[in-house]
Amino acid sequence: MRTEEPRIVQLDVRPHLRKKLEPFQIIMNAVNGLEKEALLVLHATFKPTPLLGLLKMKGYANRVESAAPDHWMVAFLHKSQGRARLEALDFRTFAGLEEPDSIEETAEETAEGAGERAVPVDSSEPAGRVTELDNRGLQPPQPMVRTLKALEGCEPGDRVVIHNDRVPMFLIEELQGLGYSYDVAEQGDGSAKVTITKS
Image (spheres, rainbow, N blue to C red):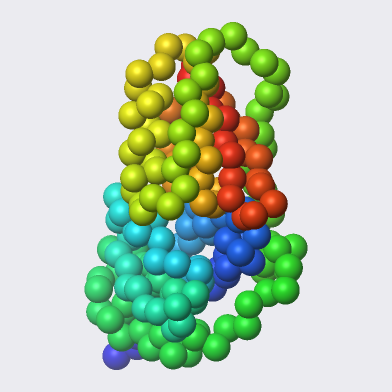
């Protein structure tokens, strides 16, 4: 009996996360470029819990393992391929992956368009009320929940300015889905201020 192993694609977004940059589009570009038989192994600095739920809705099963406190590996495989391939995966073969020195190096090794980042919208001063939220020190998903709740109470043209411990990658993905414009200002201490305009 002939068995075919799935093609394995590795994506290391640790350099992006360490620089507080948004890797969501890079990850989705890689996922969208996968054949159903292919296996994606994602390397991150933390367990990307919201991403697991998002890709589960897109039909991907996953396995997660931590190689170090700041090195998490997540394997994704389309559930049409069965769970057995994921369960048989030996994460030790991937744990030694050397982290790229630069973001450019990561982008070259990944799917086409991997170097793309969310581009801040033109931040001309709109009229409207401004709500400021300091989300630093809060555990996920509290910063996202607080921000979305504040936006619910806003009128079109109002702005919500948030200060988070890092660039909120999953909130940005949600804002893109809602069609709200935003501007990210990375701070010297690694935190990020995001100005969101409700449309």
